[in-house]
Image 1 (cartoon, rainbow, N blue to C red):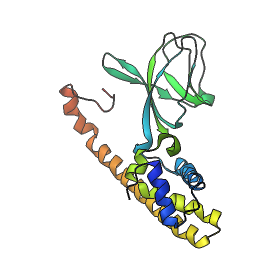
Image 2: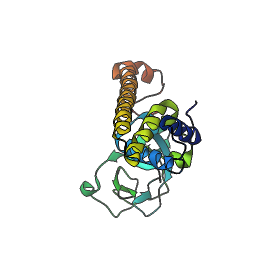
Image 3: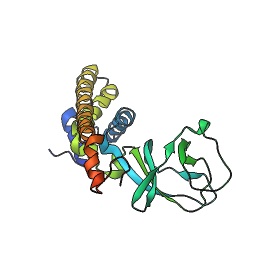
Image 4: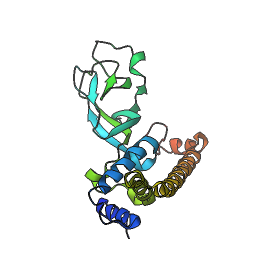
Length: 217
């Protein structure tokens, strides 16, 4: 059975549990699994980029609804180059009242906070970890690439509801194994990218006017 959509996952969970009477409960098991994944999983498949626009006279921009954790923030390309802003925690940020181009940013509640109000409507690119919400999106890259995480996680969450400790133990073990394997694969991918972008390997690219991984242009 393919596991690439929410409906396919619901059907697979019912099959693995061998229970046809849990149709109304399976969405809860999936939601609980996602709550666990949203706490523990930090991989490229849930990274995304949003384009945001600053408000003249304001230090704040609302975060995307799917925001979980920040990665980086750049000002839109000027002369072909992205300008990264320096991240700083709000309590250490020395806020100014004079409008200008923001150089620092932080997360303040549900907003991005700058050290100064914008003097124009700058465009920013925010890279962040998103929140998994399969019931809304119906599919996502985590389900596509790591379907066992969702399947074993949902079956594990069924254990307490069914008061079946054996079921809980079996599927919790399978879920933890799948989670460890997913994290290992993602770490391996990131290590490969790091090795291929060492400064010495970038010299030739900069001299040829190619893409500069350090500046993003």
